[in-house]
Length: 143
Image (cartoon, rainbow, N blue to C red; front, side, top):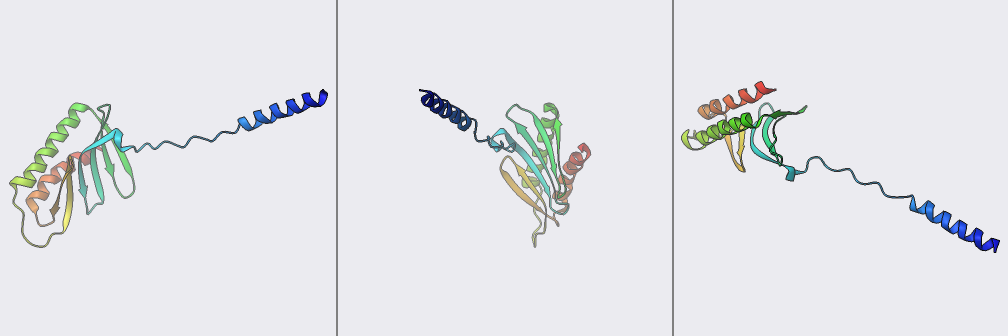
């Protein structure tokens, strides 16, 4: 009878040891693209600098500056972010439809994205470059 109790005790004890081992959960990614959308982007090829206006599901707005060395993020008030969005949209549409392109070889200096629509600006397109440099100055002054 003692052997049966000892056997049952050992079996129950070994079961609790095995039950304590559990796999650790995997780390969650904080770069889930479903949580945020990019409203616009300005990529300055020469400086290797990019600016993005991002909106989260909670309607928070962030201006992100990416360089080859760092990635900075600045939270913006919604009314100011919407103002920046309108300014960028206006400049984007002006560059795309109102200012004529210069013919010839194209060395890209700026890349623009507005809600999925993109365009590139060549170095020789001075009017287009000057229009978008205004936006670059506004963004760089925020950081």
